Length: 107
Length: 123
Image (cartoon, rainbow over all chains, first blue to last red; front, side, top):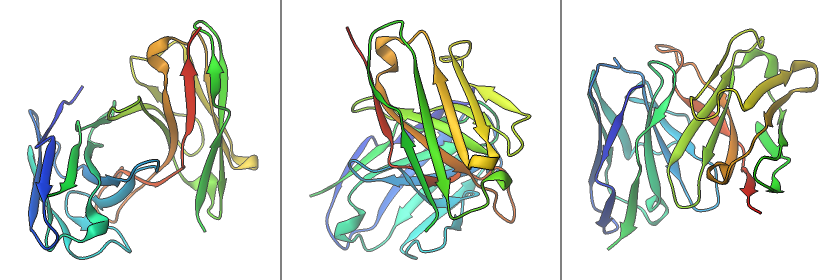
């Protein structure tokens, strides 16, 4: 099983800030890394697939980078609707595994 | 609108069974792999099971192997999760999610999720 280490677990930021969330694995997963946003009471929403491909309809202030074992989700110019939980997930091998999550809160 | 709607959750005693359903609409269900993922209260996401588009390939997380069974009926555009020998630690919101393939990677995550159905295992 591929362990996902996501950091930080929580993050306080202000509207307009730039934030970065990281996800690391001990073994290479190539670019089989996805990022999700989840708001309370809702299912997750796929933001980025294949490490850096922005899903249709997702604002361009979201971006993903990385390959191998180190990955980053960056949100530039935070908007009020961006305050939510964020998860990374690997689909390189089964069982699929998720990071522990990052709670992005308003400062 | 592409949609997944889960149903079948509820309160069940330890050792009991439940069958969850996931109804798909507005996409060709038979062309997509599907997954079940759960989220315990206040916790993160846990992948449980995957079924290929045809139903021929099935995989489970160790935590549910031997107790849960995934299946699908492509004619009814429906996904199922039969859950037996339920434990308190199975208490969670259960989501069905569509497998996604990008132009460069497959699989590439899960691109459509339902709203979830809540399962509570308690005496």
